[in-house]
Image (cartoon, rainbow, N blue to C red; front, side, top):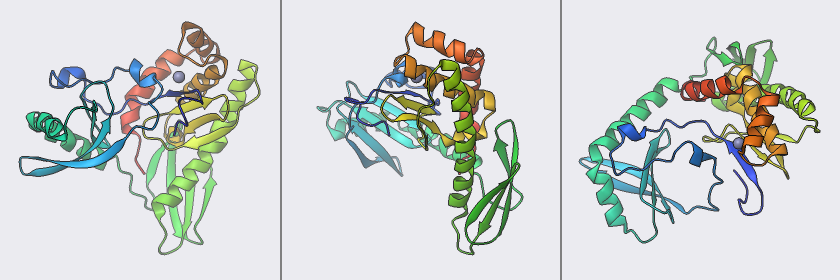
Length: 276
Ligand SMILES: [Zn+2]
């Protein structure tokens, strides 16, 4: 959710998706550069799920029309195609089929990676939690979650959705921790702490709006505090500079002197956080 791009300036910091690099992609496939990811998303893109046959397989894809050029992206969400409005579906699908082997290979790689990353909620399981490790305890109860230090207790009914309970527990911890870090960063920036909300966006670590405050991706709870602090500093700096100008980075530097390393690490670790 980024609100209305036209009326609400909202700047986001994005985790790198598991995108193929331009070098690995066919020549005709254009991929957005890191910088272009920081652009505001176009207002209300028209998306539609379609299916294309590649050899013996049927592949679902999301079509986003009204793009300037034909762009094919594969990440953990699957195949997405951005296309100019005037290109016919037949031409788009011919384009996909022309790169069929590459498409199938990348989709398979991503689904294997997703399967590895999927975190099965069960008693005794461990998971990355800030700079340490969290552990799960699953007991019988009335669908309540409780933290005891780094032990997350899920007191679950017999038919409970354990994933949902675990998410609730992790989000509660995230809100506590992120709130503290945001208060510190705001103090350093000389402003009042803005309203904080969590997001579960797949494509953004955080975003900032002067109207509605700062949103942080709750999955940051799986990463070291230094990385959380970088994302917090990044968004707080947007309260001062609603852009990515040199002045913005000076503010980030002031709030978080280790931001360069944190940004690199965030990029490197994004693809390995557990999926619940
Ligand atoms: Zn930003």
